[in-house]
Image (cartoon, rainbow, N blue to C red; front, side):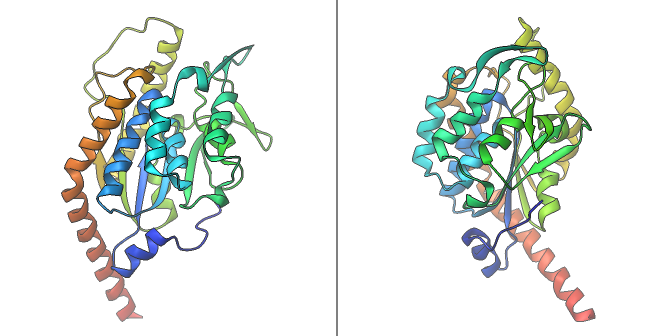
Length: 289
């Protein structure tokens, strides 16, 4: 990873108040990833300065939009205009039958053909190396291509080639990228988790739904570990919503907003408590030197 590129205003504000920088981990969720927009809106209104973003799959789309400095009003407008027609195109292949090229084009249309170095907030996009199965964290180079790779569910989307390697959906290696943020720095991590957890099984009606269901089963094996590493978990109630339905965007944003807003007092309390604890530890260590 390239690491941080200077101190962002958000991180500078945290440090000046003896508070840890705040990292935001956004899970995948296909169409349900629109919920992340509402969560970010609530955090922004509460004046919680996000200094780092790590995101997987659908969360990578929202995460990079936010990290680019995109105004909240524009993010809300874009969320309500999203559709599968804008994101996929049919292309027959032995490796899949839907090209994710339109995801890349969509990101470029919204934020431009930018690189990670152009982002206002450091952002880390998680994908999975198709050969090794290991996590690959993108934090340099073209943003849109990395987001496309992070969103490419195998057997549905074609793998994405970057620098001679093929990558698929980041959910296979880290659906909820809390660990990625902890690898970067000491920080207070807010994780937004969109997977269903009630164990409600709905029989897949077609190949796409089957592939998404299998993806969810694989992701569950790693997100259970990730959520335990978060300082606070925001888990909107997603059970009633389909991962394919963009028509519910307004409701998804609302649920994300209300869920996060209800947790603001707890977030601030835990943030201050952990910051104070880390500050005390660092002070004791400095006295020993």
